Length: 257
Image (cartoon, rainbow, N blue to C red):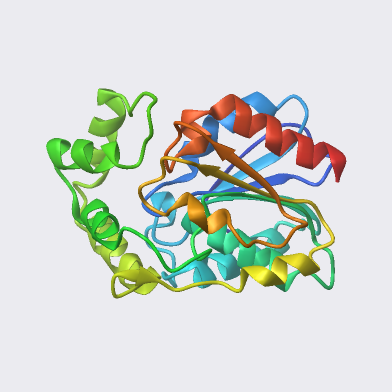
């Protein structure tokens, strides 16, 4: 029997589910706010991607392409033929790859991307590597500050939870390996975002104008069929910084497709 990525599912059956893919060094718990807000209307599934969370020991760990393959295999093993995709950062790159591979058979009902990786080569590679290696409370606090805009930062309890998780040496080792595969020196490996023009389903792009990880300029030049939402005062974590706005946009795409 094919392996299925660890995941959290909420909400009623009967409609194509909304599938959430987290960013680098995150896990499925980062989508809990969206899952709770949507659970009376939609089925939602949040995966731990290979090398993260409870998928730390997944057989193959790597870049967004590896994550896309693992998600595709998991959905097939779960008997899910059609689904909405939501991805953040590295998870956004994985969602994009999965959506582009599914253009012909129309498995993807909608695609919502939050500051996705690969929409340009620019990235704060030093910050990514520091985030992968950080294990102490002060280190993580300083690094995470760069991921957020003008709004509140993660709580002290959230930071302590991350510190506890990174007490397992396999965690920073896994993240360092994934970072090396994502990055190309001080840049990142780009996707062919122009291919999104071929998607028949709705595509949304959500980005914070204060994103210090990947510049908001990556929203420029995307195909005209892509709906672009830029938010002032928001950094690289819109699903946490402006959770209600992000949830509303996801729901609009899922309801209309």
